[in-house]
Image 1 (cartoon, rainbow, N blue to C red):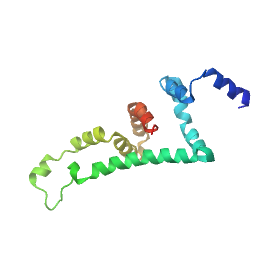
Image 2: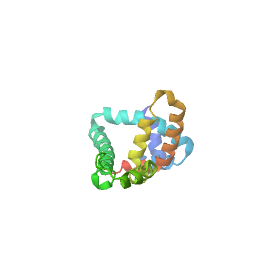
Image 3: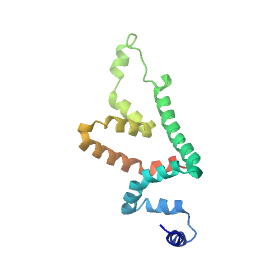
Image 4: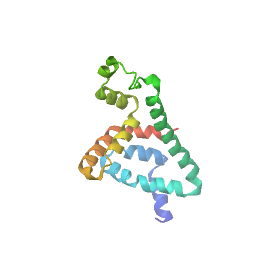
Length: 151
């Protein structure tokens, strides 16, 4: 892209920021598809350039930290999912519900829930299910992810 094209794009924004443009285009389905396809290249660009590397790293670290905080919260003894096999009471075993656990995980730590889904859907023999899950997860969390990048 030459300088005149870039200048024309900036002039077309007429005082709006690039972020305003991205937010507004994220609502439009064709533009969203193009933008989503370009995100990996954009992130690579931010990580590869010296002037944006630190900010990109700090942002990515913040996202990882939020995921880890969710894992730490869910694995805490106070969350109520811990009981020893040797000392488990019949009431604890009868009260345990994997469906309830999944629902609580999805509600209390949606990003961890999505990460778990991505990991479980990573079996190469299940490509059809992977695509179906990924589309559903992206649709459900598309707007939520925008909040992760504002720190």
